[in-house]
Length: 205
Length: 178
Image (cartoon, rainbow over all chains, first blue to last red; front, side, top):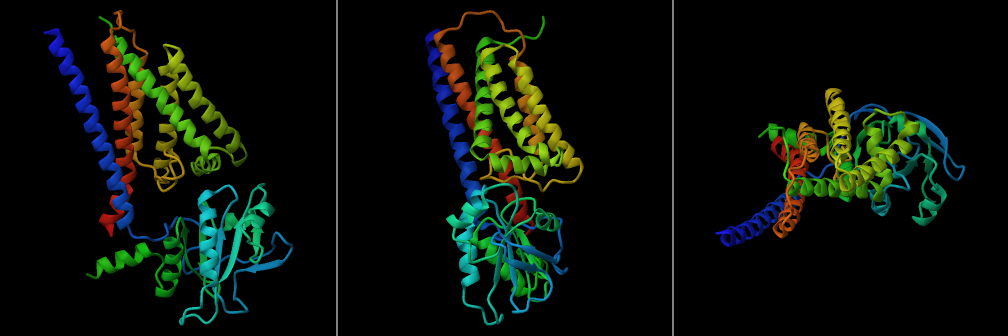
C-alpha cells in the first residue's frame, strides 16, 4: 500500500511539473504572438507638448559647443527628429544606427528636404565616450535637463518629431525601427499615432 | 489547535520565495539604470534619492532571500517588502498613473501597472506568512526531498506563467481595442 502511494505520488509530481512547464511555454508563445500582431506604433505617453502644438523653443550649445536652436520655423525647411537617449540605456544603442539611417534616407516625394536629427540626453554619464563610440559627432548632441523636462520624457528612448514649421507631428516611446518609422508615417498621414489611425480605421468600418 | 504548517511545505515555500527575491534582485542589478528610471516613474521619491533608494531596495531583496533561507522568521521581511511594492503600485493606480513602467520584470518587458500585480503580490504575501507559522514537529523522509524540489519547481513555473499572463494582458487589450 505504502509502496503504491509512493509511486503514485512521484508519478503525479512528474505529471504536474510537465503540465506546469507546458502552461508556461504556452504563455510565452502567446506573448510572442501578441507582440507580432500588435499594431507596431510608438507608444504615446501623456505629458509634454501635444501633437499639433508648437515644439518648445530652445537655444542651446551642444556637446561640441555648436549652437543649436530647436522649435520654430526651420530655415532649411526640414522636419526635426529629436531623440532622447542615454549612454546607460541599452535599447537606445540599438536605435542609434536606425535613427541615422532614417535621417540619411532619400527625402520622400512629399517632403522636399531630409530630416534634421538631434540627440538629447542628460545626467552625469560620459557623453563624450558615448558619442565617440557610436559616431554621433555629425549630429547635434544636447545635454540638457530642461529639454527633457519640457518634453516630459519619462522613458527612453523617446522621440519627438516636428515638422518644418515647428509643430509637433508625432512623439512617443520608441523601442524599435518600426516604432521610429511609425512616427514618420504618422506625420505623413496627419494622425497623432498609429494607435489613433487604427482606431479611426476601425470606427469607420 | 493553533495554525501550523508541515515542514516540507514550509521549506519549499521559503526556498521558492528566496529564489524569487534573488531573481528579482538579479534583473535589477543587471540593468540598474532601467530600475532606477522605473523607480523614478513611481514619483514617490525625490530625484536625488533614486540611486540610493534603488540600491537599498536591491539590498533589501537580497536580505529577504537570506533571511528566508537562514532564519525561520524571514517570511515577515518578505511580506513587508512585497507589501511595500504593492502599496507603491496601488498608490500610483489611485493617482491614475497606470501607464508607468512597473519595473517588475526587468527592462526587456515593460509592463504598465495593474490590479493584477497587486493581487499577485497579495498571494505572495500570503505564502510568505505561511512560512512563519509554527512548524509541525516531524522527521523529514527521503520523499520530502522530492516534494520540496518539485514544489519549488512548480512554484517557479506557475509564477512565470502568471507573470506572462499579466504581461500579455495589455497587449491583448490593445488588440481588442484595435
